[in-house]
Amino acid sequence: MIRRENETHRGNIRFDGDDIALAAKMIDAMSTTVDIVYYLMNRGEERSFVLMLICAKEVDVEAILKVQKRNTDILFEIDKEHGLYAVICQDTKIDGGYHFADRVMRNLKKNEAVKPYCVELEVRSTSYDIKYIVFKVIEEFIRAKEQNQSGEIVFKTLN
Image 1: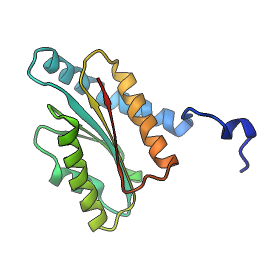
Image 2: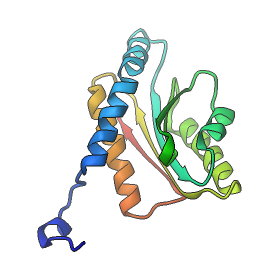
Image 3: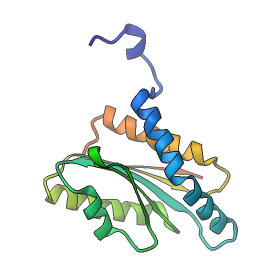
């Protein structure tokens, strides 16, 4: 399929139908959990959290995540067929989130995963709408795929 000229010069990430369906599924699955984490942050019991979106083919991503995650981390199956999962790492800053992602990515590579992608978003404030957080992590995930950042850990911070 040939792309139209105006589609190739776009500076922003464009969500296609699958991306919009993914966002809707993530919002449905994660909204209540993020609300609870926000409540804990507002009470001062938590400082920040990291949202990780990760996928890979030809390997059991869920099994690797279950072994590597802490008991306080919350795992969400987003699309098992495509090996796509999200993890909320409570009371975690980006360095802790990065080390977790690094362990997971090393295990994926060791198990010969095909095209592993990992994006992390550190959330330091409860001022962000839950939908915005989900859209932002998906936007970075799409960008990582478009820029062929397979095998890399892409991370961003929301202050």
